[in-house]
Length: 206
Image (cartoon, rainbow, N blue to C red; front, side, top):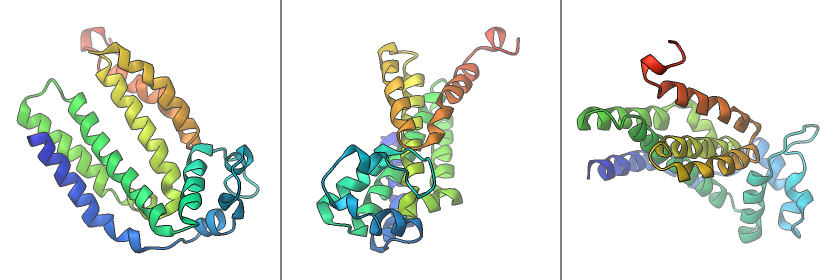
């Protein structure tokens, strides 16, 4: 019950903070990527999602571009849907931060665990840097790579008791790389989780 209440609190706070984005339009790079790309409303091909995100760049982010293509295919470029997807990703990431924090604090007492997990999720949900990736549609690259990094981290931690879950980590790694180049940090992130979970007498700093 406490977990459900905390999640509802976090989701309600997120909607209160960013729910108004559903009435926003496209700005800045959104216009270049959406309004100037008529191929997003044409027949689908690999070239539509594999081409560089911006002119004169080598950014390869086909997974996010696929979501843009599907949006335009369904709505012909209505910004409310783009903002709804970004808002949903933000809320999902907040929930994943909370769930990951609970998994990392599983050995603590109930109230301490609940408090630390809620604090971690609140710090993420309220951090000023998150506002740009949530309000700005192009921020979806960051939201999606964060989604797969969080999910891979959760699978790693939960996999200590259920090793079969860790088979999902390579899939998350691939999806993170197809969302944004930042996905390359996942091995380092998993190493940090591994090192943090080692007892002092068996740890790397022995």
